[in-house]
Length: 323
Image (cartoon, rainbow, N blue to C red; front, side, top):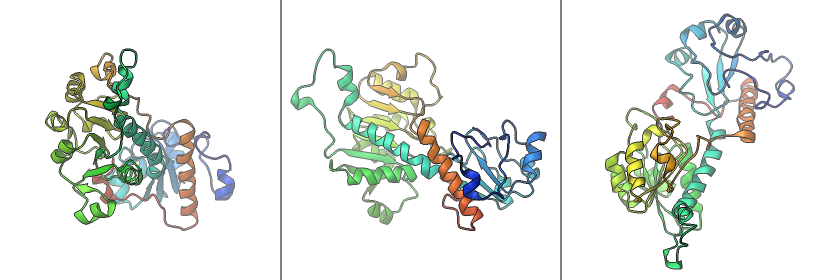
């Protein structure tokens, strides 16, 4: 989407809502932000609304935008676009990650429900053998291990705790204290213990050097037989080959909205196994849901124009923990 205003995303009454003194870039900015056409527009910009695939806001780009005060990101993570120069210039940065979180949470909860019901193994056996009454699976009392108390992870925890199934929730997150874990209604454990005790493991940690491959072959071997891995975070957090081996043996199943690499090469085992569902990174806002991001960004601009604190503010200190 880039650094542009897209009619599909932004309500048509944007100018009326913000006041006619607000100037919208027309045509929208596309391509490199340090090109001559972009520089001509950026020269007078105070608020820049960005989206997916926007080029990084480098020092050179910011040199062309001397009046820029705020960056409103109509998407999730700002990691791909912010640079040290953004923070050094004291720019306000806001992300629509909260608006994008709700669809991911809904998708994750659906995957956990399917996992608890043993939906993939049951579907694979549909034509040949229906499970007997005693072989059927359910959600009640299941132990779910949540990796990462991110904004999505916390919402997943809240929903699981409120569910009548009585899920027992374990949490692995080095930034969460015992007291905070108690307030969330979860038991804080290390990654190895989480894997050993959880029949469903759902991943919500950010992609950082220290989280890459955290669900390794060693950790996956700890998950009990019949366990399920759900990943709607980042593909690099899970060792894809190790997971393929575990699922290929029939010991584990998986619901993956993200993979590493993305997309997986044609013929990869994770794409062909009957106990693995791989979707093409669709958990976040899609189709009609994308409007939520535009509305969120417009409301942030309204708050900025009105001198009201932004609600999606992201700071330099948050970069160590955001996706």
